[in-house]
Length: 139
Image (cartoon, rainbow, N blue to C red):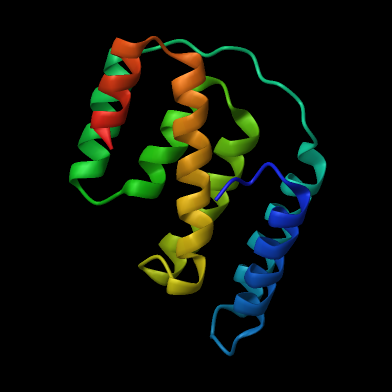
């Protein structure tokens, strides 16, 4: 799923709003994170980011995070490494929800997969073939 289409983003935001409205003890915090996420998505537009650099030390950290089941944090670090700040911000907000719940809620799995697809697409366009292969293997 590509998240570059504004209609896709709006559908994902609607799903997130439904999740935030569900009866949970931490609804207020989820609503705050969701509001920040919505502001990030709506303010993103189609701006281009500067090319990030490949850093083998960060790739090792990503691999280590993934091995410890911190997939969302690993994705955020990968997005920062590539210089894709809007994506990094959205992943960090999703990571806050994961930390809050203790797991990735099933209703947000598609959203997370969409962010992963965007990250890998950006990596493939930004990095050389060898760097991309190492980056991809870290996840």
